[in-house]
Length: 134
Image 1 (tube, rainbow, N blue to C red):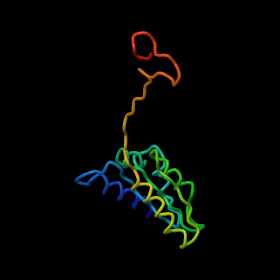
Image 2 (cartoon, rainbow, N blue to C red; image 1 turned 90 degrees about the vertical axis):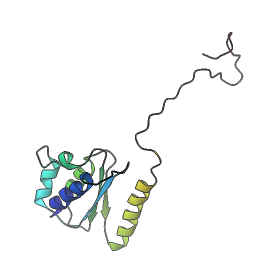
Image 3 (cartoon, helix red, strand yellow; image 1 turned 45 degrees about the vertical axis):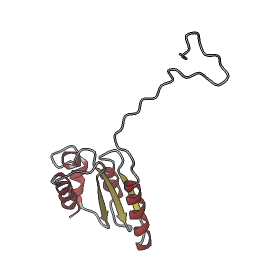
């Protein structure tokens, strides 16, 4: 039950005592689930209604029988989610490792950076009268 598993994962994430700055739901499936389509719409079961804000979904379709369309839509529910096709067992470890490596390498999350040129004078240019650059 793919849809039930995703909804349970969302529930667990929402009920955590302490939320991390970076949170993700990893979903591996080898099949299809007609109910999973309801997660991709705009109705009451839409994934956006259940997924905590800022949490991403990374989906992994294993073998030839999974529904790549549904998995792509689930991954796109929040910016930063990914879909990975895993053809055989040998690729599963690498796919999970790449995903986890990306999540663990986050240094900053939702920062604001202001960059300006006030006071900067290009090399070789004369500083304007008054001492500071424009």
